[in-house]
Image (tube, rainbow, N blue to C red; front, side, top):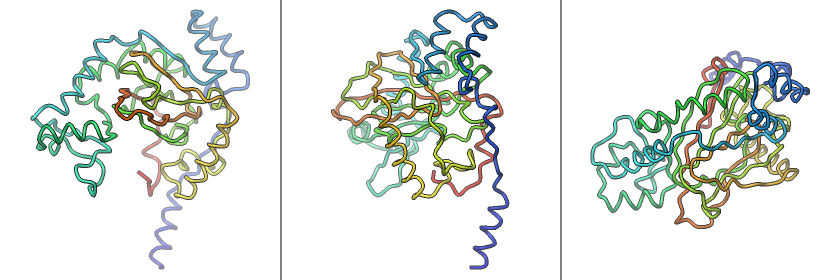
Length: 314
């Protein structure tokens, strides 16, 4: 018991006490955001389209973009994902997350294990598992071009009002059915809310496939009160009981806003504010795919993941 007390005391001494100062929030979270936007229009010679998109970000917390990345890159990325399942050559350092070869296995399979399965078994897992791949940009040149796309980067930098870099890419084939959440409660970013989520439709999205669901205007809500030492206190570090309370809290907050689904066309991007409540709609037709790509843009030096102290939930 004494050893446990010492361990907890040591951990407590390592936990940084963070300060979240309102004046350090991004420009769009300031009380005079629309005044600042008018000034940006003059100083930066914003086009009418850019101005309206940024005003929608201030008012509603999201922006929809079209014709940002070449369709050839989207198709190339999808072909590379297909190759993951058809090739007999292991792709080094590639892992397929949320996939189990046997029901009792822990989630996540190395590609070297996958290629050892026969074609019929692989196809069964491909169609029936709700798998995803993190950092596929390291294995696909097409995905890397999307990740480094200058037009998308420019939009994210325009939104944040400063340089920002892409990170944390994920490729999905099926709807995530993810519960309602806010990215600010997931990512350790300081100062708060300097993050843009970016979701790309890699095919025309069917309403029955579990599309993205979002709540415009919810980005103006305050962060969950128990995350009182953000970014140390987030979903990644909190106890299960706090996670449950956060989920109930968010369900209540979401009732104040209109629920919308993003029925995207192939090639459309949905960019969202870190505090906007969103998630994955229930899949009504499990034979349908919802091929998509996600990444997040964070200014240099503001990702504090390596400064957060565990234990961690994932």
